[in-house]
Length: 308
Ligand code: ADP
Ligand code: NA
Image 1 (cartoon, rainbow, N blue to C red):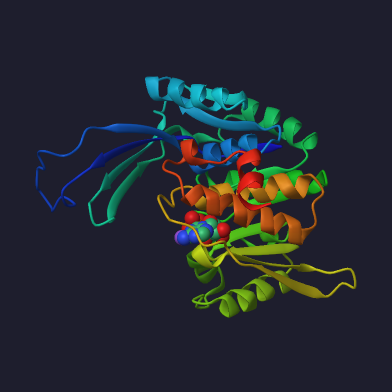
Image 2: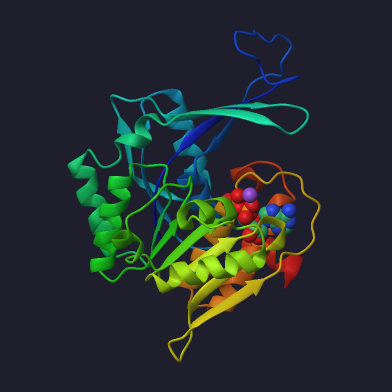
């Protein structure tokens, strides 16, 4: 499987409260560096869940780039399609965490936003797409690149699993080339212009998106699980709801990334939409019981031991 996407170093500091304009906060916690970025997180999820995965992306020549690469290699991910960018810094996210659970985040996307400007890298990605089982994309790289790669995969009959995160509008022509679109409630609401506050709202919105030509649409519903709308054997739209198991929530970071990775693994293995949805909901429910983005992602054995 091929993931093309972002790599970020999350720089996390616990603070007594979020700083006000012009305020200098002393006595904050010490800096924690946590490898992240949706592309990298999804690649790690896929690897932990037992599938072979290559990631394509860009990092800077700074020490963060090196650490981001090493984290992926430690997870058995092929990093041969990651380019060291001589001009831009590695992507970073500055995250302030307050005791009440609120946070402030600033992302400096850096090298991630140059994915697509380097023709030699693009050519290698095109070649990799044509032999991949599936292409997994998110929206932390330039939209033009997402559109281009989707069309290349579609032409080569390679399924595209697109996670519409962070939410941005995409042209209908691109959405129609996607095999599986995965969105959370906020993203579904932004894309459709409809409120998505309940499972029933999500079913309606997913059905509308499917009727506009997206083969399968999945809306994740946090603690309520997820809903999938696809075409059944008779050619009619068909919705499947999977409830989430009740869990003790420790850290919801990367729950969506875990979901996308698990769904991609299950579908490319030939599991049915029902089975794949269940696997993705179970894997991501287990993720939220554990601390950390990449470090909290479960293995296949752990998911099976917990829920099967
Ligand atoms: P995102 O993290 O992208 O905002 P969601 O909040 O919808 O997306 O979470 C993605 C998936 O993670 C859900 O579909 C669900 O399977 C799982 N999940 C998230 N929060 C919980 C929770 N509190 N309890 C159980 N599962 C959860
Ligand atoms: Na959420």
